Image 1: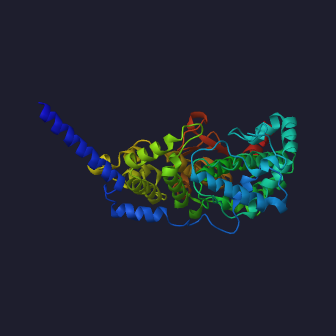
Image 2: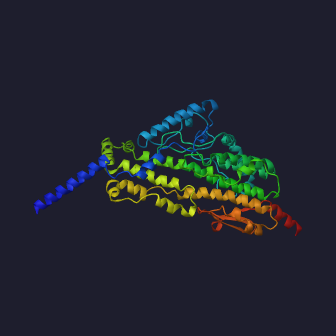
Image 3: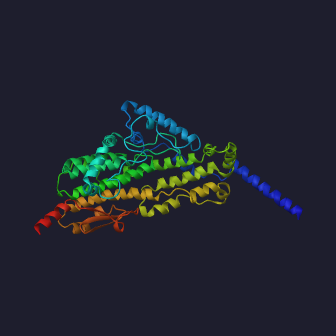
Length: 452
């Protein structure tokens, strides 16, 4: 019995040693040709997140009033510090060097109350409390002036090395004050100037849509453009249907273009960030921990994590996301699953962490593409509303507008004089519908009331 236990113990020891050796050498599992192709795709340079002027710089320094002659030096210093975050564990909260050198445009961590920040109708908020709207606008003049420079930029690209520790620029403070400015101008009666400004602002945002390597920036941009579309529809509803529109409005609220859909660049950036997070140096000694834990964690990482296999499997998953960018929304989930093979025996044995991260704990990206397609749907809804607004019988025109309705991935309807769309991404709209008025509908309603 003792001899049997001895041989059993020896066999287990040999198996464990063999497993540890294979893990350390990363000999198994073998990288498949599909994974090699995925790695090449994920490590390729950006396709569309490039150009002459990077909007990341505008948003990064948006909270601060940095003189123009100092901007480049501040950006360079911050980028060097952000690069350093990729070389080790979390080092505490990161702040721009501008924090202690220049005045702030809005308080930290957030700005003042934003009347036009949520999904509630912007015009309604301005009219319900005009004094608060004016006060908010007055306090945001510096921020508004900076945000209006957006039209000078042609892409948004993260300039520093990928790291989960790096903070994002402030992406949510510019949009509310831009919408507020337009809504105030419209409510004062300067309707043509408000439309011209709103269409120019929206065109600047659309110029960046699809030309970024940041999934967060894509999401924020899509959300803002949908709010901008809602404000535009509300303003058009209060003007005669045949009113002349500023030149920019046709492009600002025209049908979505192929190059505005999120590109593979955003998934390349996501892959590189997650891949960098699993490198050995990211498991180094943390703040306040004994120095000995550094070596222990590195040793555990070398044994437990097959970085080569995990990186290849992660690349395969992100490549599958790139492959479905133009797939109809109803087919995306199935297409993604088909693009990534399940973990086999060798992978479960010699890349267990990679299997867990890719199959169980990996980020979910469904909300991002739903938000992207919902913005496309909102623009299509405005185009359809313009067509119905010119018809003598909007209900009959809606039933006959097959060509305009065929482009939607969402369910659309015309009811109670409003055009509605059921978003793919569930929100707080009544009964799950987002609706807009037809152009001139408020004017027609006032005329009907006067006749009665």
